[in-house]
Image 1 (cartoon, rainbow, N blue to C red):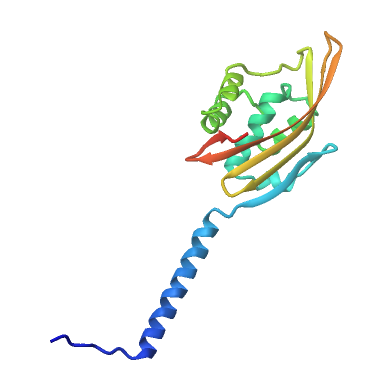
Image 2 (image 1 turned 180 degrees about the vertical axis):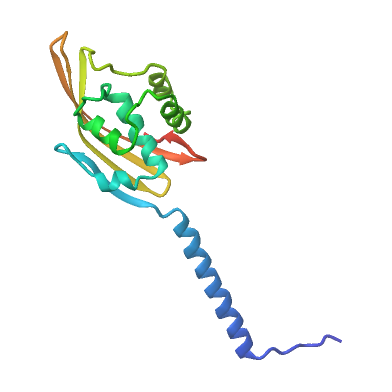
Length: 182
């Protein structure tokens, strides 16, 4: 013969409420772990967002310094370019320092173009015929995806050509490494 155990309804109600509260709390905590979200103008009209740079996280620092390295001309102690000012804010005054190249390479190890550019330092010497100037940099992040938009004005003095380049690139962060999305 089967015995039926009767549990008071107030205990069942309490148990269900406690279970639901636990599930809601758990979902809130798990969503907050990767809820990084921002959209910051880092450079515009020669104005640098120093507050953002002083509080920058490692992935954003790697992405920003990698792009400054790849597309900007060499910095020397007397440089006054926006690129060099940003690197000073990031405490990366010598972009060819081995520690800095290892740092960038760690994050970009799956991005072939960046690995190629890192083999030559400086990437664009100060005395090079090609001179690039960063005009604007915007960085945004939603969870594990970081997007960088930059505008560069360039000139090739030997060929008397100039250009305006505006580009947006997005990266997914997976296990401490960037994977290019677009």
